[in-house]
Image (cartoon, rainbow, N blue to C red; front, side):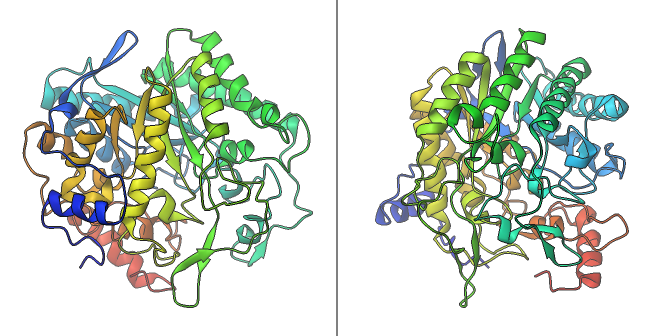
Length: 477
């Protein structure tokens, strides 16, 4: 049963938003979501996108497994005209879990199969895939890499929460080495090679992942880092600017995207009452990107806006706006009814988190009207996701409405919206965090349970959930 989502109609939602002083508008006219979006020489057939949703279900060698292929078949058939493929590590040491995809020449065949299945499913259901864009997210997980973290800086906010050896309970220390400038230069080469491979495989765009405090996001916040990739704004943004320029030089006509945090905020911990509260910090807070140093509960979009302007000039044409840290501040990233198994009770009404996403995304879109801006924060709105999405598109606050968790339970949400049908209540995500609980479950032979939606994709993920729950050393729900 929902704790916060008590709305019977979209008018109830809008009324509550107004009562709370939140700018969340809704509309009964969903037609803006069916309009195409022109992106240079390509057209995106509608305004609905699927966010990069990791299933934690690759084979141990980083190739797609049957569940990975199934997910993209369902995404392809679903009707959204932008499918933002999930994170693929550019080096095996940069994976966030032992079942994350890897992208290099030895993994090309599996990724080709994944892409082919996605496009074939789209053609089978929708006939035409010329206006379908499918991308892939290039990543290095940085301090969240397994089996060992890779630090870009020593962060007084996150170091106390970062494990060097989780099983042994050993955290990083001031002596933990940082990734060197030379290693970053070699890593940049891996990104360039991965982008080149992705285009050759047939992906329409590559995403340079700069969100959720993974490595490239941490570089943006690296005021404590010495050397040519830390300290000043120019140094902190050097890696991504050089990377985009190199990809553009190699492929001048291909689409480059980035999913980027515009607000890191503070890490949170569980308070005595179970609610999330900020971890101890001192002012000024200097190691959080897009965050007011003197008031870190508030975004400061000056540097994110500056970087987006520079990236647009270098050739980036799609920006997906995000915020927060899935491990340390999940309520900022994905507003929820019930917390993840390793999390805290939400410290704010989830509608406040939705409104924060909408507000920051609108600032980006208004500043860059020619940029394709993809918004986040919609899944918590459940049946009224299309109402809010249509209003945001109509108001010029966003180009595309991105759907994450809700796409796992209801991958054909777009078909319902485009057919002017309500979302299926038996498959609409309730943000109860079952998917996150599976992501956090590492206690099987592979070191990672596959994730999906156990309540609404029960035939596949119900048995996985039951096995994880039965064998878990801690209660999952």
